[in-house]
Image (cartoon, rainbow, N blue to C red; front, side):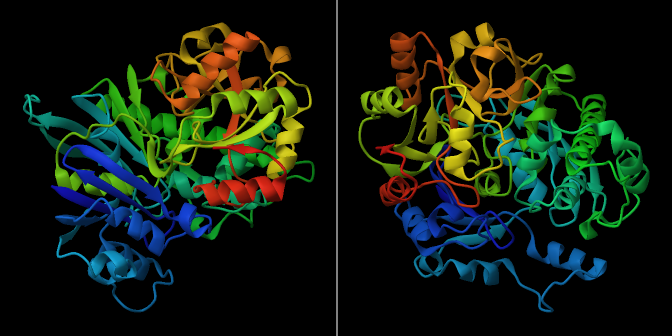
Length: 501
């Protein structure tokens, strides 16, 4: 059975194609249209997905009428006309005109949950979803399990028992977006910048005022006001900076997320955690999850784009064989290890665009900007290329067997294959380019998986004695990551950085 999962219509659209338990393809709309967080599905993405068809089912990632009902009840702008899933799917005409597939829709938080659990290594898990808002849910907790053991050639049915949910307008995700907006950044897009900015602030200078003005109870959590409207009316002392507000917001967000996790541990039946939703991208908070759960799985694309995979997974109903995040557009050819090392030795910074694109917001080695992490001025050089604020940190990508030599990994999280936690660097002075002001790094560990980035790190380590590189996404601020060879060539021409393919 071939199933197309669709996330579209709100932000960060994507398509995923499943053939039974195998993921054939998954791609982000923005990489094709070159419009950040594009809610539409571009024709080229439709054509690429169709190459893996025909489809037996098309599954939409949420229930449109429930979203529209919530907007109507809350007084939000909603367009004045009900749009069914079929009407929403007319925005993918290349596909709709070429298929007789059965069309269905699933719940927004259910698709998040399925994208996590059905790709996880667990037979059972406590699943936590925290985002800004689905149709009306903002937090949900499930007991997830498979009905029957997996047999040879068979796959067990996934089941989800809802044990807790929180509804709009009480939303941790919207709280963090409101903080992002108050800090002069773009909400629903630049929350990751807020997270980095927080390390430069003093939380105590804004914490009490922010908490009193917004939070009714941090245990549930409940908010005093609808944070969809922002927090611009909160008055802070004259000496409070946006960095202080970011720090206070980060601390409060962490307290609320951990409260949800403790509730999940108490109510759930499993010591395994599957964590999904946009808030799961906050790797500073994620470092503490192992204090509560024994094992943790965060699918590399926990936001709405990843829900295209979740929708398809629910359409299939059974466990998914997840082996790699490299699921998008392919640039064919051998991984250019020697070319990359030569450019690193000559110019210290190099791009790589090779193999299939990452499905997720973080570059993991196939659409990356790489640099030697040991130089004193490398961080400023890379930030200048990417046109980012100078305070922004970069991530190290390191051979997994060497991670404990350089980083204090969080409890119960000895690896971080998808850049999902921060860890204290043991040798800050030696690696200033990948260490943030608070001494942490957003680590990516690479196992012995024969991937291109693995081959590169082995060769780099053999040549230099250093088992890591600086790794950031191959884009500039405000633009999606490079996707095609043409995008890579344009990057080289416009920004003067060689991109090896």
